Image 1 (cartoon, rainbow, N blue to C red):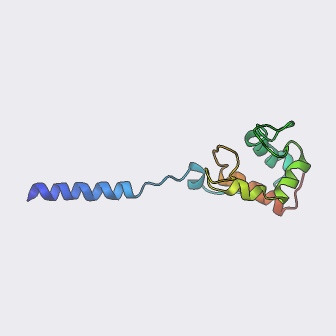
Image 2 (cartoon, rainbow, N blue to C red):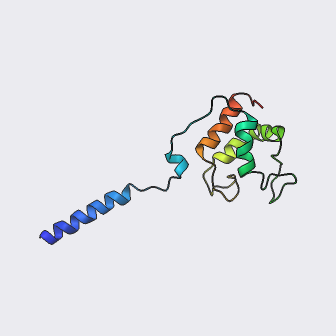
Image 3 (cartoon, rainbow, N blue to C red):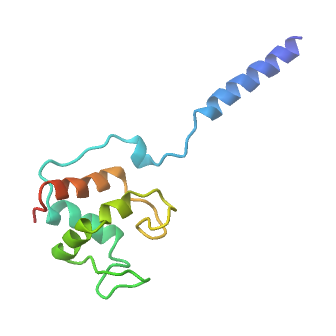
Length: 121
């Protein structure tokens, strides 16, 4: 009987520990912040340069339909669905960057804040 109680306790504790595990990314677990004074040059361009221009350069590669190398290119892309594409879950059809990993939520929020601030340069 004592042996069964130990087994049951072990199974219960193990299931509680494993049940609390998730596959959230680090960016989903950290505090979300957005710079109030967001600008293209200081905030958005580094995100695009580090995550997008590999394919969305000039010239484009890997089937990318447009370049994202200038302020106007990025502004136009945001106005035409970029935020939806970068906000999709990794592995979802149309998610960007192609092949992942998904941008952090802070990076996505920065681009949204830039749009909401009327695209300051």
